[in-house]
Image (cartoon, rainbow, N blue to C red; front, side, top):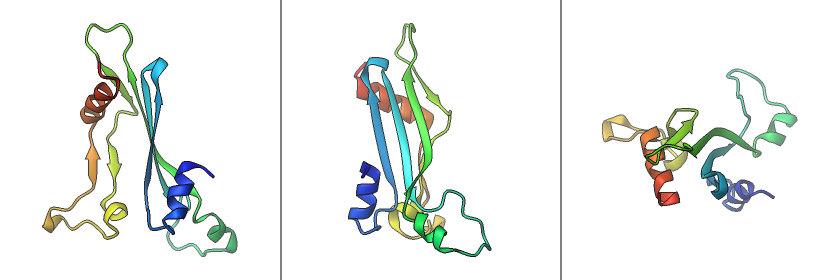
Length: 124
């Protein structure tokens, strides 16, 4: 059983999202993977077969981000690929849709935040 499967199943499927951070010290690289349970591409209006329900609790990687130190630069800089924020969906964190009227929204860790975090991880 993988780590993300353990978190999802041990919580009796109440944990809706798992973030795995893989560190590669020799390359000064971090790989972030966001997993949720469920079918990788649900289609509205489709009927559900037994095969569908067999995979509904399997972890699916919804986002992967690589953060790597740029070699040979005078300053410590990092490349984030793809160049997009890590998005933690409010509905998966708080188990209800975000209510913008109350200031609720998805949590977005922007590229610059990921770069700062990597710098702190490697303490460069």
